[in-house]
Length: 253
Image (cartoon, rainbow, N blue to C red; front, side, top):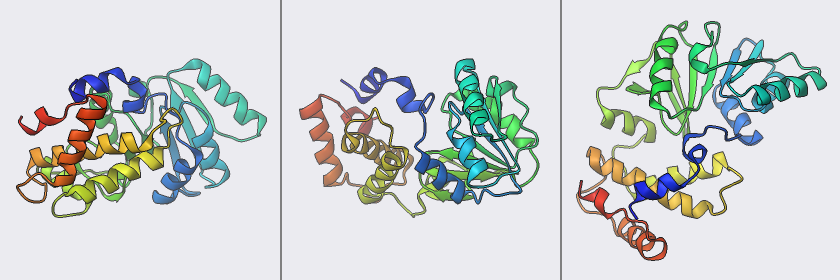
């Protein structure tokens, strides 16, 4: 089957981040990366549970922390858990599109749905200057990141616009061109940092992500060299022979 068909068989939340709870270590990495501190007003959009808000309050001493999610059951559980621990966080049951985030200084935003992102971009662009939007894996559309510690990316308001996708991609990876080693390194960083419990084979996911990174770079003209690296050919063959997952057609599009 084609890789697109295989991805459709996976749980949607595995690809989108929706309903996936980040490990506590990831929150700490993200908050250190964003220099979160006592003067910040932090929003976690699509928070799911209370962990991110709890760590922001307890360990990073933020001025205010707000979790927003449209799942009322999860929001109520989060409120109860914070109350048990006597922490002053705020949880709002709402769609992120409808939420007031105007006082935010730091926002964690992990969504892949195009309509949600498009709606939120208008909100983000109206935020006060120097507000940090943290995303995972990719930056905000058409924007150059201000800071990258892949897979974590920060865009600050007002946003810096990328001239094209090539410029954006190379700014994320911090190299002049993308080879197999770069693609593998960044795919592995993503797999290890997210560490989702339902993933039984991290190496399998890393191979898929590596191939997708390199193939996309090739399509955009930012892969190193004209030839397909032997490592890429080997993994494409391995995925086809062992798992009946086909990447070949992507190289010919």
